[in-house]
Image (cartoon, one colour):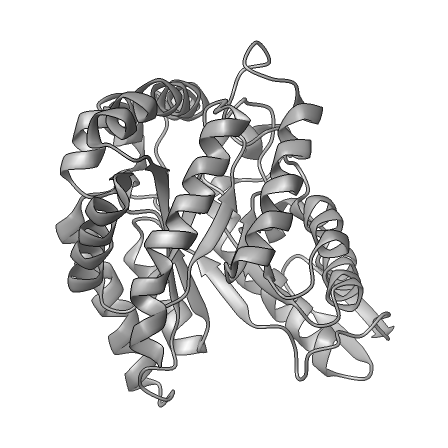
Length: 355
């Protein structure tokens, strides 16, 4: 079983500075590489304390690439709707070369109305822009020269430079939350998928993941070769009480800034984001207790966290927990304690299964 780190900045400047956050993330990634974590992921968001400190995940992952040797680097995710896909294809290929073939390219549609408004992109075009952008990028990676005539992009005789190290191209991941069409589309294409259980309900998560696996199998892809990453907050301590109490403040900060970011859904609706107008209420209703009880966070002693990992494994099958360990302005001591305890007393339980 694989385990990853997920750097999703979600703090106020009174908690720490942006520079301090990135310095902390770099130290955690470097140590995580030594401890045997499998991947490190970061996000593209704008304008809010929810993710907005990281408008370009490629920049942070390039810095992490320089400090690590084996850990996989995942864009979780870049947004084709907000980027020129020709430029994005070249930048991702450059990161694949800097890391000597350690890039996993994750793509997302975005879901915060304010971001679409500022970039002057219609939300009802998000799926079309997303799919066309990925088509442009993968073709530029795999074809010597490309001429393209699409709905949003038109160009002639383009030779991408640099080319990716990985052939035919880096693994592709799709970020999906609650739109079934996204899960099915990813499965049919043979792409891996990144999910966010705490932003939905567990019955829906199970059904969406099953629809992804069904689409993967029905499209003729090798059964079992699909990969799923599940984004989970993680806080590990030596005692149950210490973990629960330590988790409370930073996750409340996370919910606070998340609620603020999705407030732009108020009064909005989009056919491509069915039900998202209810997201504000759902996020505001999140509490530390609810996240722990629903197993949409990994919180407790190492032994309790193993039980929580098993719960999620039974719910959605084999997957890779992608863990936020420095969310909500968590201090360095607590973030490193989670990193070290999880590596020392949770990961060995699953490494034994592989031997």
